[in-house]
Image (cartoon, rainbow, N blue to C red; front, top):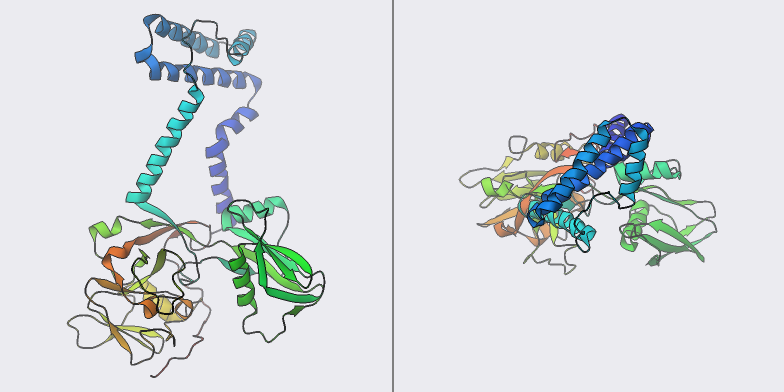
Length: 429
């Protein structure tokens, strides 16, 4: 997404949240006085509307007298009278007899707002749109989880730039330059005691020197291992050497459409969120969380096969296998393209199903087969089998944060024109 659009969007949000205050602050004194009078008029009108049934006739008349006075003052150009009146109102002396305020009235009003807001939020979440955060990279490049973005130069440290990067791109600076030569201790990653909520920090040691990086210990350890995997080097870092240089991106945040399955059955190619209840992980490592997101590739009765990094299906009643392509869902064509980070479908030696070209699997009735788009790094139905219909939550709908090229409707972005061939060879069986 272009930066100027992001800036305009940020300004629109800023105006929505603080526009009235900003406009008031920039206004000339006469407009500010009228604005303050209008605030008091709005407040007293609201009190009268909410408590009219509890008021006596004399109290209603007192409120109406006050409202008439405020309206007349606001429309007049009498600066002195306006300032005198404002001084009275701000001191809590409106000049007319009003009923005593309710005990803890401010608390009652704020609680009403909170209760209504939470009721709406939980109602929408339970019935329509559920927020979901991508935890891992199993769906890359369709959707990104928490990941490291390396850069050639150190990230900017100025607060406005860091704030802009986090607000719009979920990025946190992840830069570590070793101050003293030493060996990194991969068994000593501890959370810092001073981390802010939702902004975890981790302490790690290189030699005898302690350093601090953003992210929880598992994220930092995983980032370092992935960054140096495949490199033939020792774990000793020289003074002045950069261990990490870039950003920690906190992954895609999206809304899941919970109503989609109320009006139609799941389709091949749907990016689906489901729960792992009653699923069994054969290697005993367990699931990383209760909610998973994968692409639905197999319907009940389908027979699936991965041949040379491409996925084939034989639907009930078909005589032969056919390639899953754009006629089923555009996502399959992207995955088979082996471009822009897509590497096709992989045979995984430790999996239960689809381990080689001649291996096939038939999906039982009432169940579905799920695969990650990042097939070489995805724990999916190849390992733990079939997902029951009752486990399905809904389809991924909208990426609402960050403002990356994936922002908007899920699974619509074409891959970048860069060849990314498979890393794992196809297995003949």
